[in-house]
Image 1 (tube, rainbow, N blue to C red):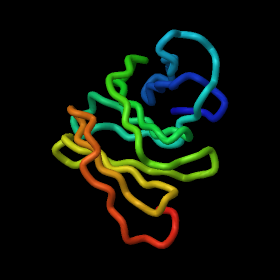
Image 2 (cartoon, rainbow, N blue to C red):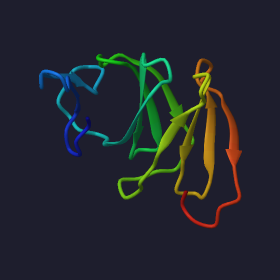
Image 3 (cartoon, helix red, strand yellow):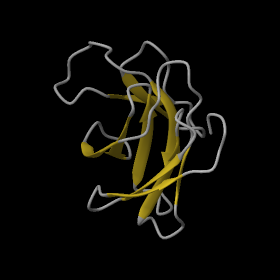
Image 4 (cartoon, one colour):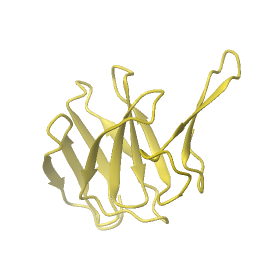
Length: 123
């Protein structure tokens, strides 16, 4: 779970109710410089993709604050309702954008491989 104005991911064990927190900031400080708007689990359950209000996506190892990769290009701010999803193979991610496009990245290389156009409003 992510909460606006909080720099932690909250991992909740639904069986026990135990909560473990992972600081979103790699340096471990408590400064809130972005908000996670959407969280998406990879198909294999090992990675967590966080879509933020700062036009970037962050890839974490589940249960940790280890940022593995960053993805830039989609246009999203604190008023958007961005959503992301994974290709079933886990090789690509897709995210909606306020510039009326859907963006696609190759996960391992971080390469932006497509900007899907055709919408007349935010996707």
